[in-house]
Length: 183
Image (tube, one colour):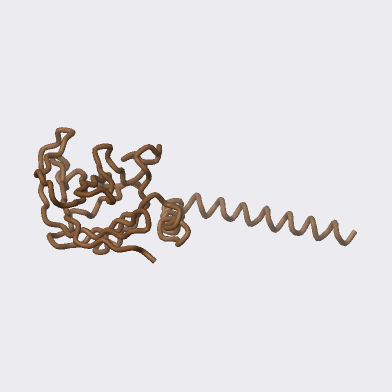
């Protein structure tokens, strides 16, 4: 008899907990999603198992990147590595990333317009830390293409998103200044 009462008590307690969680999630879904997203992005386990991590210290951004053949590597889901990219470990690479700006849960590049010349952009890839320094920032017409200055002797990163007036494309280019093994 005693065991049956405690089982009923635990069942009621668990049921009450689930109902309360459901109510909280209905009233605060964005906050719960945001907390979960931040935890997943910056956890040590995620750093060890992710394909790459984009970090922009000035903006407090630290975002997981997915390989080019991963279905999550899509601008409607994450910061996207464009198919035209060369990966950071390649000599004289151009690593091109695109993401939404504006509003919504996938507007990862909403604040990149705040970046200035000489700000740092960091990519963690294959146990290496690649630090880029911004050298160029410009808007260009939205045509589905971005025009990049030709270079043959340096590695660079390109970030792109809609500009604030939404009629143009913002392009930010950084050059590799430091490459170091991560511990």
